[in-house]
Image 1 (tube, helix red, strand yellow):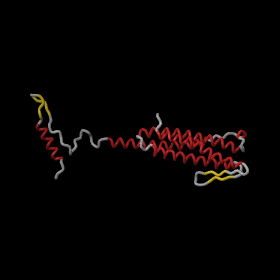
Image 2 (image 1 turned 60 degrees about the vertical axis):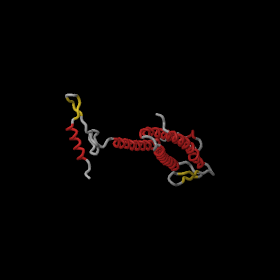
Image 3 (image 1 turned 180 degrees about the vertical axis):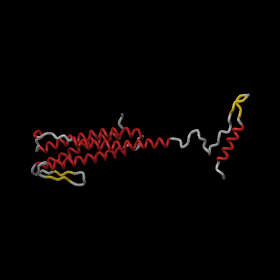
Length: 219
């Protein structure tokens, strides 16, 4: 399926965001491991994470991954809000199709962030010598972020399906097509077969005319 413009915009912006996050959030963590160095980054909860000249121990590592989890959840919700606004002018079918494209892009984004974070985690544990420690597999982080993406995609698809149903209901006639409208002037002339071919059924015409007159609002 051809991607929609909002999908392409989101993908381009997330590609830039991966590098920004690596440079401005992950890289400063290296400052905490040497004398005179310092780490001062956002914790994504309205505060800061600040360390200087300390080891990347279990507590620091836990804070590191918790902040990344918070960041990814916030970013995922931000992207779906961006999609909601940017796709508002599309047809319902186009919007529904584009949800899957956005979800795929977000999953790739999460995988790239996690890969960068795992490399940083390994470097910090090894004190700059990554090869001396085992590589961390952030599978739990992938699972949590993936579940958030899936839940939001399902929620938006459900809303669009409901919109489809409501639109279909509005498109249906309020009465049966063959039911005569009381305000509509009837077709008075009725043809019937006769000896000389088709002729006008006067009695039927008179009955329809009388019924129509009675259905009109009384003055």
